[in-house]
Structures are given as C-alpha cells and as structure tokens.
Image (cartoon, rainbow, N blue to C red; front, side, top):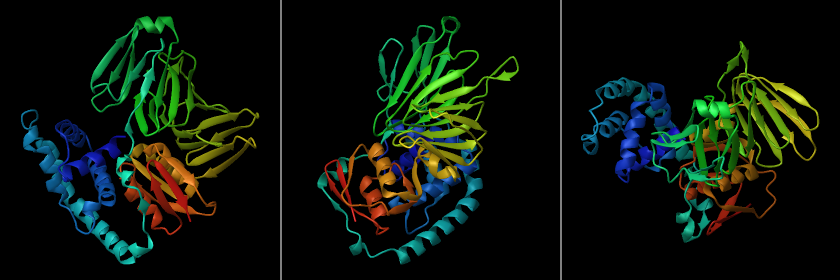
Length: 398
C-alpha cells in the first residue's frame, strides 16, 4: 500500500530509524507525489504519529531534509523541482497544520481520564507487528515465488511470459507472443494473515489484495471474456478492453457470486458469512447461486448472506470500505466483531470475544501501520470495550 507505506517510512525518518534502502525508497516515492497527495499524507501522518501531537511540525523542512539528505547525494541530484513544489505547499500545509493543531487541542481537553482506560497487556505485545507486503505466487507448474524475499525491480522470465517485481514492490505481467498462442495458464497469488499486495494483470487491470486472500487468474486472458476467482478481499480497477468495437467483460467469481464489469472500480469482501460488493465507479452486474441478479451504481453496496441466500442493497460511503488499500483502518458504526476481525487478519493475532458485544459499535480511523497497543488503546477510549493481551491472543471484554 503505497500511501500507508509512505506514512510508515516518514515516521521512521522522523525518529531516525530508517534504513539506507528505505531512505532511497522514501525519496523516490516523494518525488512522484502531487501537491494534493502530499497534503493528504501529511494530514494522516499528523493524526497517526504520537510524536506530532501537541505542536505543528515544519512540513517544508522535513520534506527538504529527505530530498537533500547527505546519504542520498552520491546517488541522486538535489531534486530542485520537488523542492519548488514543496515550497508552494507551505501556505496550504500551514493552514492544514493549524486546523490539525486545533483538533488535537480540542481532543486533548475532552479526552477521557487515562486512569479510566487502562490496557492490560503482556510484555510480549511488542512482538505483535502490523502487516506488510507479503504474498506468494503459485505458478502454472506449481512452483512458488516468495514475493517478500524477491528483490524490487526484478524480472523473472518464464515460458511465454515474465513476472516483474517493480521498484515500488508491486507485481506486473508481460505476455509474449508464444504464450498468446498457447492459451490459458493460471497463476495464483496468496496473501497470508498480516500480508497485502498489489499486482497488475496482463490486461492492465490493477488489483489490491487484502490480508488472507487468494486470487486465481490466467496469465493471458481469452479474447472474448476475462475471468478471475477470488477468496477473501480485493479492490479492482478494471482496464477497459475491446474486441470488434465491443467491450470485453471482466468476471470476478467467488463461491456463490458472479460479478460482471466492463471497466470500473469496486471492492469485493468475501471473508465471512456474507459477500460484500461495493461499487466506487462505473457499473457492475452481480448474480448469485439462488438465481437473483442486481445491477449496482456508484456508492451502492450489495450484501449477500450465504446462509439465508438473501441480498440487501444500500448506499454507502466507499471511503470506509476501501481505506484498507490506502493504509488505514476506517470504520463507521461498525460492530466490534467486524473491527477485531480486521485487526486479527492484519496483525496475525487470535481474537476472542469474551462477552456478548453485539450492541457495541465503533467509528474512527487509524493507520494500519500503528503499533497494536496504540490501536487497542484508541478503541478502548470509546468506553465500549477493554482488552487483555496474552502473547498473540487478544481477549475482548465489556
């Protein structure tokens, strides 16, 4: 997740714990960002970093220090173009920082007494780390590629196609003429608990994979239809493809749902007892095993309940549904069970709900790269629940 990763790298730079490789990566990412991106990222950094609360940091000097860091001078120019862009941001950032400062001041005044929100946690909580770019690809012959171990900007040449791990750590495919003739071979990408990954399929479709998910896809798509199979959660930005002036449909299959699009952006979550499909833009047609079918418009969400085989369609804010791919947890009136299921997958922990918490809900936003103790304390401040941590097991209680 590039924005989440950038926030994490900025925090490492601010506390002087960043490695040489990560410093180079940070510099490269910053130089590709627009003004709007930097302002958005800075706002999230202000909210997610405990070191920034209570005062207004100097955003211009921070970004300049990174661009001009002496450790980079042997490999990079001084990046004057980006510095000019950063300087143009000063007025906007200053205004944004004032608003953030006021927000934090109000929050500080109104915050609950810390003695009323104590977190009971074992010393081993420090071993629980947030997830990251972790996945493996199972090739057509059964060979497995560990993407975490594979160096960035590496190309693996296979028979008729190549897999490229790009400089930013994502995966892309290039199909040669030989494979185009041979037809369908399939690869499967698998993200573990505590993992996520971005890949671009051979047709140009971009897929962001959430933790504990699997996507099976052809190396080369057919000329009349494009079909993939999903378990878990993924965000799709489908590339428009044409044949004889007609769009080639893109199909996403889960165990009980078939989704058809022509070119659009949407999120599919099929983890538990439901299949949730949220449309960001374009249009999609979803069909189910029970014979029902629906067409969604932007900002609509279809929730299919596996047990009752019923479907409910509502209007939602896609921001909360897709925040995970931008490096954040974001919830609006979500059940504690839903919140903790997301936490369990991302931090690779076991969560046990000790009491009946069906009526407990949570709204809020926090970085997915935050230490788990801070995340749990943030949820505890609502007064709805409390936590007890024992190793990699989290008890949730009233």
